[in-house]
Image (cartoon, rainbow, N blue to C red):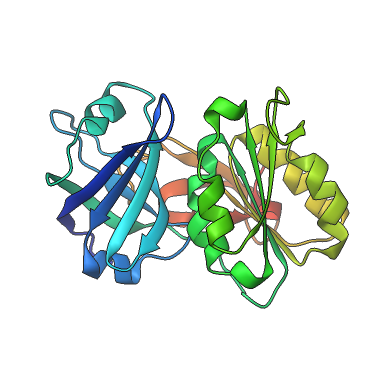
Length: 252
């Protein structure tokens, strides 16, 4: 596959929390071929390496990106104004394999929540969403999931909103009536979800969060230990072979 960089018009920019931004980029061609769970590589002015950002949603010809400022690059990116252009390479990676007829639980943790919106909306009639945050001040996209017709449960580490605890608590209550789990977030969260899914014999897909320098498998920056079909440990590129893997493939 040939990866072409394209300029996209920034239609709107909104600050969701103290560190999280919501960008909407217009590009009909790229929006039409982007699948749930894929990501884009964004060119940051003055920086050599692009920044990977998961696709939050597709709205007609608009690609929605919700990202957190974590360093100088994303801080520079956050200053982009509506009407300006942003250069991206997209869509990248292997997304979720979804079946809208199956009862699917979508689980997001922190900045792993945004990519679950497009994924859950694709299965809205059978989608249950569990999102976990550090506190109420870090919450994002609650109304978006509800507008998409998803059953939403929120947990917070400090109990400032929703269930006081981790995403695995509400998951435990519904896992026996679940046909598929899709999750994105910190590795410890994904590890716990994968363990529960295995114990209850529920298929589970996880989107791994790794630093991705190139986004197309040309470097080794995002290599992650994965089991091959014979159960032997090997390494795969999260950007090219993932970011979505079956949970039983991952060497936790």
